[in-house]
Image 1 (cartoon, rainbow, N blue to C red):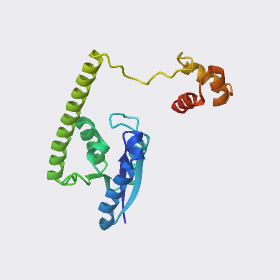
Image 2 (image 1 turned 45 degrees about the vertical axis):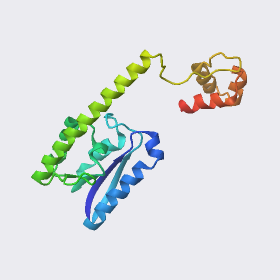
Image 3 (image 1 turned 180 degrees about the vertical axis):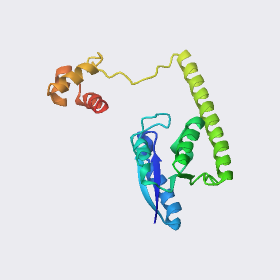
Image 4 (image 1 turned 90 degrees about the horizontal axis):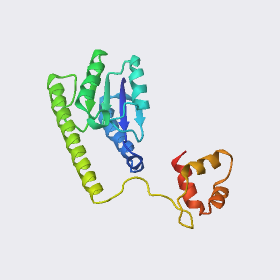
Length: 201
């Protein structure tokens, strides 16, 4: 069998919970099985495509000395979210004699001239779409802020209505106090304390 690397990524924890990575793996397996590829999976969870610090993506690149024939993804936006990044990575793979296939983007196969051309076109559209979404999101946020809408995490309060000092909760936890003991000290229920501690794991 021929070695192939498979990369899957979910941008958020919600995508992970909804099974995005598993669906991507299934798509890649269905593609690889009839071609007799031996798959080695690399998986990033809750990592944005804009984030260059993707641990398993980096691990995959460092493992190219295993000489896989191809890198397979379910969709190109799982691999890169900007055209410049995409083309840079594909050039790097090409220099190492490694192809690239995106299963759900028909015709994308960097071992053929037509595939390379189509990939560049799709990459350009993907970048354009992302820029449009970002522009609409920014405009919508500015309009909401002008109407007085506040963004960010809601403030947690004690029973008497005062705000819970998140930093103090963390400090008390570091001193070895239990969530229940912290709640008693802060004069609030244990629920917001558990919420703060969970957010700062």
